[in-house]
Length: 237
Image 1 (cartoon, rainbow, N blue to C red):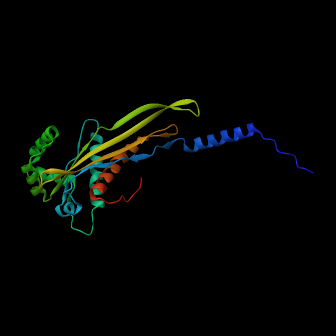
Image 2 (tube, rainbow, N blue to C red):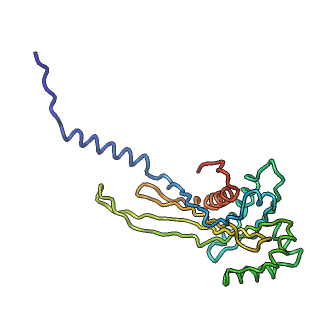
């Protein structure tokens, strides 16, 4: 005797599919948006080598920032100091100065005003005084100086449409930029440039947490230093 043939019930599978989609939505709804690292080296002089960097020594100069970014200047500077030390090769005698040390030595040597004037002149002319660079190098006892300027903290909102659900939703993208130049006090020129580019974008089911912006400084600083030292990151974010 043949068993009765099962009848395909489209309504049953539609309900099952709908239930699965609801379950997925509930799972991902309310999750923080992933933080993306798009940092990159934008210039490297062929004369620059890590051997020269480690032999010559490095001074981190005070971080500069425009209006609206001041609140991230100190956290970024602290993160930069931490990663400068954390990723420093332990097997060699590599001299590094954190930005507070550089600032103190600038003040003690009476070079603060000359340094500020030189930075302003560089922004206008892209030229910095070679004699001052040599003087700074002698004051710090290092060959290389790392200058960093924080860009405006971006916060953009847009509108997107979900064709599956037939509804629209708002998205938000938050990001920060840190622009770094490495000055060679012997050559009197920039030998390396890098941009720390960190962002997060919300979707229909994710959001950009306000506290996430505090992580951006550390991630940008880590990306810059690991690229400067040419070493892999110890952590994954």
